[in-house]
Image 1 (cartoon, rainbow, N blue to C red):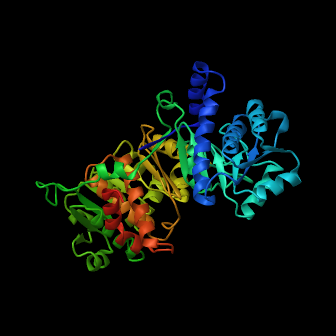
Image 2 (image 1 turned 30 degrees about the vertical axis):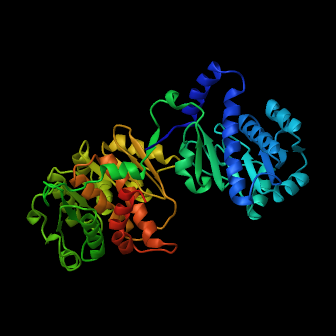
Length: 482
């Protein structure tokens, strides 16, 4: 499990180390780690360090200092280094002096800067650090645009400049990094704007014991493998968890088929479906226990409710009936809209083991606009509604009423297809039926769902039914460590 900390948490921890150690030691430690990674990057992409050309985009303050010290180390190993100073009067003095002594070229003119950047094997983004705010200013924006248009790789120092550290928001020109090297801990930008960061490499500079409680966490495969429900020798179909599904309608039978199938394939011991899409579910999933009426569904350990249910009086009645069962719930799609419309239903789920799975528009119906900070929005909604909220998107955020947050940054957008959310809700329901904590269930289901989407896609868009079909393969891969 990886921890995510805010910019302020990082600054507070760094301040303690700065007070304890000699002047400049912390920066040199970070810069050495950056240089080590840059050496590896050049070895992989240019065959080595000696003879390569490295261009540093150097902004004001410590981020630029990190780039300068790292450039000095590369210069000593035979690289040609040019430092483009974007704020000459505020450049880190010690780093600049070291770069000059090493023989690095110091560039102040924009035309000369463009020549150096476009002739480089790699560009190092040291424009702004974690305290920076707002988009890139000129001439940095023009220079970065030229580098990206030429296809020259950019390694970002700490974060891609122009992307907000704590929200991942971009409101103008910003760097899209090939890779990012960060120090001390992951920051929200690395998970909320993963597509801007590329692979993120973490350099340990000794902050760990000083960081405090994480702002958010990211589950890894090992975490999911360790907690995924696996039947033991004494288990049967009932002890593994019986998942109920109330979904679909004559208009949307596919939602019922997808949600039910996902619960079946996510290793539920038994799945009971109840609703007007009974014939479609029965035809596709003969292992499910199917009925048209909720009162005939039988005993369950959890319920998934909402996909394709409808928001009319029949849908409202079905949701009220499921809530009245008193079991853990995954509430999705139309059921979320119904919660937004009926205060008594919201009150009935508050304080329960409930996972709401809205996308941004559904979120707005129950908790207001998401805004730029997805972590803050999910945490706010979880506290206000007193349930666990799984805010779906390219980056999915799961927050519970206690303030615990999990973030899942997706490597792609293959799951952004119709019906994909129905599959996710079925997996969440299966994990709730197996007795898993709601926040963990939401985060683990999201990881498995994303892996299934990637397996189904293989470089091309895949429909929700293909994502669902790849759930067993995703679970096997995660459990085997592949």
